[in-house]
Image (tube, rainbow, N blue to C red; front, side, top):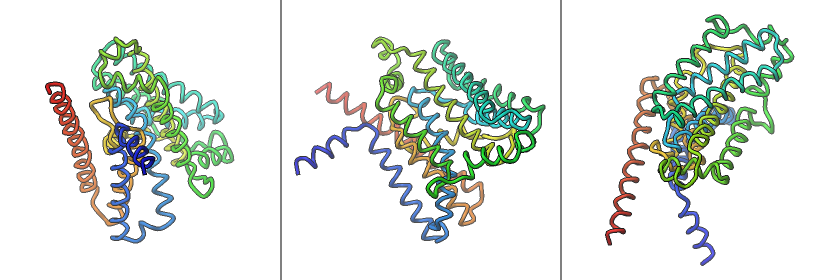
Length: 340
């Protein structure tokens, strides 16, 4: 009995675990409610499609969560997704091999992440302004990379066999009966979850989000830590860009539109604090699931797109409001203890 108490006691001490579990409970409840309204929600194919679709939100959520934990935001995420889709598909549609096209795309996206990190971390530009600027720049690159038009089908450049391989790997193919898109998201999640929760760099990310001045005095390299967070965001955006390119078989200049907001939603629904320094990446996974199930369920019951946006918007605002209330309550409690 004592052992059980100690285990639960340790779990209770994990900061942010409660919010993460709440997201998963909400996910299950919403899923069951929509399933009772329309039993097609429970179908095997719908579940597979749900997992594949939520993978994009998981990846975007990971990137935005890393940045939000530092107390910042990345508005360029969606545009980097579009840029990645356009660069990779433009190169492939002109006959550049898949591996080379992907490497060039990753390099371009990482460059954006590094620029964002230095603008915010070193030059101390407000993250909203810095990433708003790079949002326009990267979307502009997405437009001009193929002469202000969507790309041709990638099969026209690299051939049908190579195009099919690319599309199957990132979107249409399955491994163990589950779409590869989900496995890509899961593996990416596990890697970045480990880095954030078990490494010194991860602790530094939380530190600068909690108190940047205290972190700097403690020896944390604030600039490089900020660069790392924005680089993670860029990498995750690149993967989503490749997924969207594989899904369509071509590059779309508007790919990734509004995805920065999807990332914020996945994070805050899962308990990531937009004020910085708190939240678990586990919650982001649950938050992405909540978002996708809401979207899928509302679609299946015939809800208008406007109503879908209203419902999800209200949930995001309530999640942030709850975070503010909890933080204020914790602050008052700590102050009362000190005075006592």
